[in-house]
Amino acid sequence: DAVQNAASLNRYPDGASSELREKLGEINNLNPEQIICGAGSDEILELIAYAYCGEGDEVIYTQHGFLVYPIAAMSAGAKPIAVAEKNLTADVDTILAAVNERTRIVMLANPNNPTGTYISGAELKRLRADLREDILLVIDNAYAECVTADDYDMGYDLADAAPNTIITRTFSKMYGIPALRVGWGYAAPEIIDILNRIRPPFNLTTLGQVGACAALDDVEFMQKSVAHNTKWREWLSAELRGLGCEVPPSQGNFVLAKFADANAVFEKLRANDIIVREMGGYGLPEYLRISIGLEADMKKLVALLGE
Image (cartoon, rainbow, N blue to C red):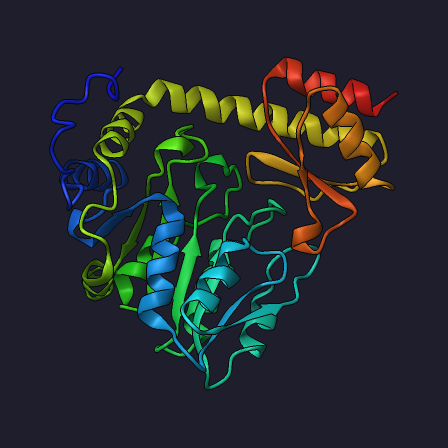
């Protein structure tokens, strides 16, 4: 309704996304002046790459990290460096060992897409403490709303502590409005100022801003979504393990499952109107990523796999 009722579509959007930043600040107890909004968190990640790295520089990410990271690095002329994970989980020591004089950015999804794994707040703080101060740490919290782990930390305090850390968030996952393309970042004023200098002036549409504000106001929807995701993520993980699949513990709105013949499973599910994500592009050809859907969808999927 908020999008349908949005007025002034014959005028340019608010270039500063003022109302949305104020609302984000209020809800998350953050300074709105330290928030930047973008057309999805993808745009924020791209702006970061353009601003902080270039030809001859290196950007570190984990081997099964979000594919936008190497794309953003290469688009800025930098070299993406994929470092090994341990048990499909980012490993702080491995990341630190890959750092050299050319390293400019470390991009970390926490929880990670597509594995669903995460590192604890203590490990996140250790990573930041042991990185050089001039290396920018990007903490991509796209799936933060899905997390139930007690030792998880979004890292806002790290962003407040020094101008070398930025947190990114999105409305595309648990808020359920990916088509509106709304994301945001939080960092020290120095970082936000740099990103705003290269940000397109009307990068977030009026519909995106209005829709995101309405999503933030709909607390009941978010609470129901989180409860549903938690229940059926655990149920699906247990069912898949019962069928013999390897399933790493997930903190996202999906599970990753290893199959003897992932391609055959993919085709069978597609033939029955269930679409899952193939993982060959992430270097995990034996795996499929399965999003948490409605109860009927989950039960249909498990029944098909059990045939």
